[in-house]
Image (tube, rainbow, N blue to C red):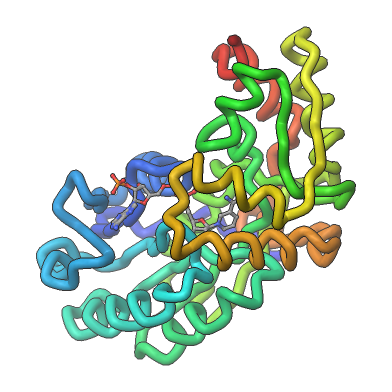
Length: 281
Ligand SMILES: NC(=O)c1ccc[n+]([C@@H]2O[C@H](COP(=O)([O-])OP(=O)(O)OC[C@H]3O[C@@H](n4cnc5c(N)ncnc54)[C@H](OP(=O)(O)O)[C@@H]3O)[C@@H](O)[C@H]2O)c1
């Protein structure tokens, strides 16, 4: 096990998805490590779908954290990430860290596009986020209707706190070439079914909350209501069917390897989010 808490002060880091779940924490952790953050999202004039917006964000930076919306395995992700990575390298931004997902075969072309870009790359493959229960489309259902409807069956998943992802990303960026050319798989500390996760939230909030498993195909019909565009529905349903087949029911030790400490426990996440009133109706 390697302990690495050192960071390179003064680096300028482009953080894509900076208003999102992981990007906001990466920005916070990078600032805390003494780095200068260039937040990149559409409100800041950076659009993954408009290549003319990329150079102004990248020019003069040392590193970038890449988050592809809405999914790293989306059909257009490999092309966009590959093009951006090559442009970044051309502008001298060689240190690139991509957020990917454990067990997601659909994401491998995107990872490959980064690997062949000439960048000093690192891929962080994450488990399902604990914050899927507190931020994003799932939380409203749980908060307002007391029920989580999801195609997670009874599979077990080691939900990871996005703050741990951020700490790993920032440590990797700050560690020079220590993690260059590596895939880091990161997970939380415990395997839980979606039902057990909801039960922990119910216990912490004192509310009657439940989980109802549905087939991925049936869930697809609900996705349109969450704003998933029609052309992405088949991809997302396929993604859930494959990712939630039990392939990820194991722990990964990337957090320990990079940070030299245990991942935050799901219980800690639940207590903090409950105290913040996230699941109050
Ligand atoms: N959820 C999970 O459990 C999980 C697990 C492993 C990996 N992942 C990966 O995590 C990634 C999502 O990360 P996240 O959850 O941190 O993000 P998120 O919370 O979904 O937020 C998306 C971010 O992307 C920005 N964005 C959206 N469209 C954009 C565009 N066209 N151009 C530029 N920026 C855009 C948004 O900001 P604006 O709207 O302001 O532009 C926002 O900052 C996906 O690639 C997914 O595959 C997710």
